[in-house]
Image (cartoon, rainbow, N blue to C red; front, side, top):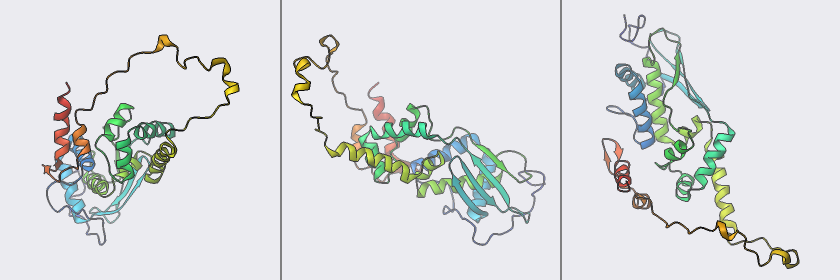
Length: 267
């Protein structure tokens, strides 16, 4: 009897040219977004199965891994001659949902600039949450063709860990899994930036003859005018402006640790 189920008790068949995890020991995932994904996995999945999955990922037992909007499909070699088929699914957001996300991101010049520079700002998760569209899944629909009982099996776990490493290499895969390709997202944000930069002082010209009737009338009724609230700076604005230090605490960037502390000053 195997440790994961009733059938697979022997060692897996060795794979030549399989996808092998770069990490040789310890945790997998170096960037904040991949660590965020790993934290979710370790919260919802059995630790023993994840450990065996890491071993499979490091041995190169995953033959193929393809990420599509809303799903990941992979092939994993176990102890049987025929590789197992693995599917991991999440909700892919539709065009209307992504239009809301793009408007929200375009409205934040700093986040937009970081994304256009190929970076994934930590605050992007808050933008998604504000729209009730979580960036990272709270649960996963997972399926493997192996006979092992329980989800995730070691084959699924291996794929999930390799997915986290793929996120390390390209953070935009996190967004692509939710249904938005990198080029489409950046094209929308770039178009917004170009529109703002074209002529921020442009005012449509109207002939005076067409405005004689209301030329001296206020554009807004006086009764609706209100004092403008005093501008306040976000408590963590200094952290956003500074170049992030290359310091990590237990694989977590120092800024990710300091940010909630700074925000607590505003309470």
